Image (cartoon, rainbow, N blue to C red):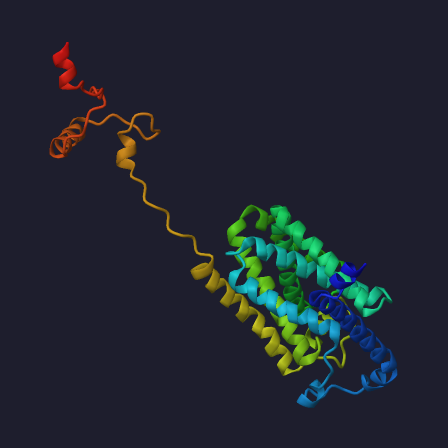
Length: 326
């Protein structure tokens, strides 16, 4: 019993227990603060957004702050080193996409505490990341799905500004169609589509993280409402929202240039000596030389230093004393 208590009192164990206690207590405090300030926040949300910097003062909460910080880190890694470190990139794609989807679903459809939502999100994300890493085609398919979803949402944002469709089947069909096409192309053309998918998805992750820290996901909320037929009157984005949206294609272009020209560039292949292969018996490139080529080969053999023949007798000579005795 004394040894067990000493083992429990080791510094690493105490640090681990303290970290778990701090996370749970901080999350509980955040939930209580949100619940206690629900009514004033609803009253203040009725105020119009004047597109001034004073309107951007908001508290950064515990869960979304961690999620958006990880989005910026993962997006930067995929943007620069997505195709060079393929396994890590596929793990990051599966982890981030599954974790974000699980977090949003749990936040909207469940009444769990924040620490339980974070644990469920981390578990689902790690499982999806391991699956995408071990099964390479699953990872390429998920990478294409994520990039296709981002492209479809960008297309639908511009299309809905020009044409107001009356059914939700149009955006759903476009999202599914573009995502499946990108996923199939990513499985077929692995290297090129992995570079494109990682650049698109990495730029979108970085844009989403920056959007939260600047304006609390105002741009992404507007895009979601605009695409899926909701009333967006009074919620038009401001000039800095369009600046954040314009950062995405710039990041995609930077990622494509960096990966195609530097990080994902194939090393040059060594030159093969087809001349030697052509005159080597048993080679698939073998062909008998003609008279001119035979003359050149014979001339090269005359100029070359003599080499020991394979038919020479390499048995050791007998000692002269033994020869004299015989």
